[in-house]
Image (cartoon, rainbow, N blue to C red; front, top):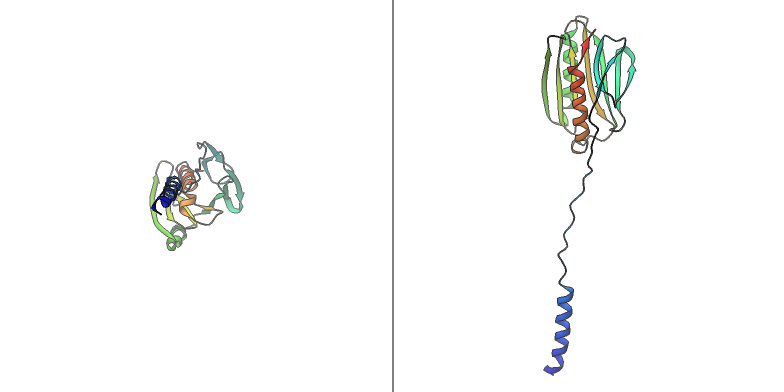
Length: 187
């Protein structure tokens, strides 16, 4: 009886060893979309409004009432909204409104970084805000000469605010907004 089971055991062990010698199954890591944007080139923007600035040549600008503008980035599905208001002995109110607009995002924001901006040669003073986290806007600023002009800007994406997903585009547009603020000139 032992002699009859030896060939069966040899066949069984051989088949077990041949089928069990596969590599271990390892799940593949998740793939992430790589977003590359073109090197920014800037052009001067000027019209009848009392200010001028440089903007990304890839963006599309559209005039709104009262010297407001929308600067659209079609490839990124984002828009910078610029709002201009003349200062008429109401600088404190304008500053308070601009800061309030930023800090309304504190509920969803992980952090809000403030970067003061001072350019006494051009008489441009302001604050740049970088909002980190899943807030509706990632970057905002205000700029003023504190006597006649006040300009605010904020960027919004046409997507659910997921900071990790829009971070490359938000960083790209943040640089454009900083350039806009740094090149701002009052007329």
